[in-house]
Image (tube, rainbow over the protein chains, first blue to last red):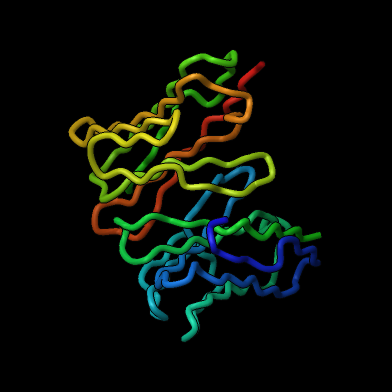
Length: 113
Length: 109
């Protein structure tokens, strides 16, 4: 058990809709990373937060946004969903910078129909 | 932009064989991770390396910073080692983790 909790595990929704994915990091970890894993693109970095502040952005679409709250949990909001957004979304947490071990959640599988 | 290449893409081994998976990257890095993903989808971090060599049980990971290359070795492979192994690297000064495409390992009894 990594200590990172992601909810929900599965999500099925229709095109055009909006969903929110939630991540609770391991106790004490200040960093949260979001990743998308699709069949054609593999794993890709979306966004990174440290102690409530956005630190880095990757290939995140404008329709997607995220935030990290004072209690350090994070949410990834996906709006105007398209079929191509169907993927596994992972969050990972770490204690600090890139020299700290990463702990992955079990992912949220999003299916857009 | 960092690029991470893994080889082989697929690997089938007999139980007990010694296995090597290779990873190369194109730019300076701050850390390299070896990850394991089972068919259920969950990702487990096996190793984080910035230099040298690490060992955990039957798994060994090495990195050569000058050659921009890392290897993951599995000794005495077992069917439960069957999974996708993914190499990923943080570019120096970057929070962006770049992933390889993964190596699908199947260990046959």
